[in-house]
Figure 1: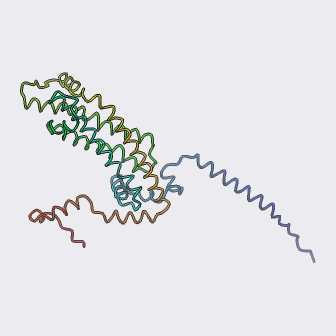
Figure 2 (figure 1 turned 135 degrees about the horizontal axis):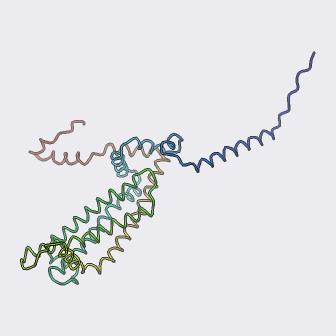
Length: 297
């Protein structure tokens, strides 16, 4: 009868050493993968893309921006929500104030030949049309550029470049609050002068218009650097606030998916602007009948 074959003894130390070699190889492979650039589709299937952006990427650009705006307005954490929303209001107020100062400087020189007139005295004595026009158009200009150049990169999947965001915000603030009113107010003030007193000659060609712009806007040149510094300071604070809020909001979405679910429910329940307008018009006795009524209650 033959003896049973002898089995080789198991060495635990050899098994442990072999496992360490396997772990090191896996670690080196994962380290090399960090230097491999993947496309958005590759990241999606590789599992490195967040679940929130995987869901948001299925929406169109317009619908995604509308959804993210509603999401921010209904974000449950007040500090982050205010830090993302308030820069728009602060920027509008700063732009409107700067535009009003420039308009008052130009109007006080063109109507009363006194560029050193105080701000409140110029508001009280000068015609209101140049002031209202400068305030209104500067605010609209800032809001338009804010939506396209400032807010749109913050709604993208990639993290915005801090220096690029700061430079764009500063350029929009200075252009809408300082340069735009200084370029448009002289023409309107001169038109009012010509309409009131026909002895003032009207600009008939490009050279006369350019001379009018340079001569009439000169009283505001002394105040433009100070207003530009104010606009840059406000833009810097607003950019930092938005960068901080965006990082906190999207980090919270990745870490706490239930916060995204709650915000989605609130965003879906929020009525649109057209629904709010229809609701207001619907309360008018005669015109309200023409507005379609919502019967889903």
